Image (tube, rainbow, N blue to C red):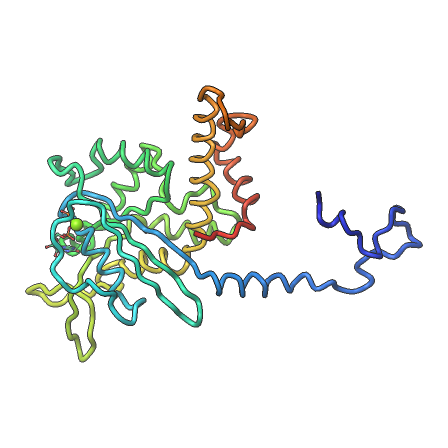
Length: 312
Ligand SMILES: Nc1nc2c(ncn2[C@@H]2O[C@H](COP(=O)(O)OP(=O)(O)OP(=O)(O)O)[C@@H](O)[C@H]2O)c(=O)[nH]1
Ligand SMILES: [Mg+2]
């Protein structure tokens, strides 16, 4: 039942409003804005949780990137277990760290994975294996592609590689994050268009600190000098980090929760609907299968869940 209908306020009568019955607004505000404080208090109490998984070819720098994320300046201290050389990753491995800033807690979990498709050359573009993998992956999670080991490319090569990858993604309908169809308003469109133009970010990973002009910086030592991961003149790691942890964290979670998870749920419910009916069988399948598979419906679905708690 609609809670607003259940207990009508004194100003709501069964009579339709007429010029002689003053509308509710005239009696003053009811204090709806207090809900913002309630949401804030609840969010502060519960904290936020965010999961990232790194995937790609073996030896590409995935484990180093996980360490870079944890060691970059978002964290004042290093989580335990870092600082040792990264061995080859042979199985899934998750690292969790709680960051607290001004009373807001973020529990960040980064999952490292073993490399895949190592025998195939991908010097110039996406391999068929990557295409197949990304096409499936972007229907299940938000995909943020990066150009790893960007220090091995000149600035011109990075740009040319980026354009080739962008073209590949378009040609093969791989809809990476931030997906254009989920831009909610003109501000989203402007901000995300700039990001889409820069993705894949050209990043450098490093888990060693070096002294540069009296400052301790995270970077890679080469015979030409130190490549600083936090320096935008050297690589785009700060853009990646800010997208993930700062500017788009809640949006990434919303899309995961309201679109990817909802789609997964619908698929599973449809599967269970096909199972033979037995004790405990409940018909939970949606009225029209595949309802959530078009971007237009995604958007509606996203709006419908915008009040979700997002607890984890
Ligand atoms: N030049 C350069 N080397 C890097 C970079 N990131 C990592 N490396 C080096 O690449 C090697 C492999 O790095 P890992 O992080 O272990 O690679 P991985 O993708 O986790 O490898 P697997 O676990 O085998 O899948 C190490 O020697 C790293 O120091 C980078 O941005 N630039
Ligand atoms: Mg690894």
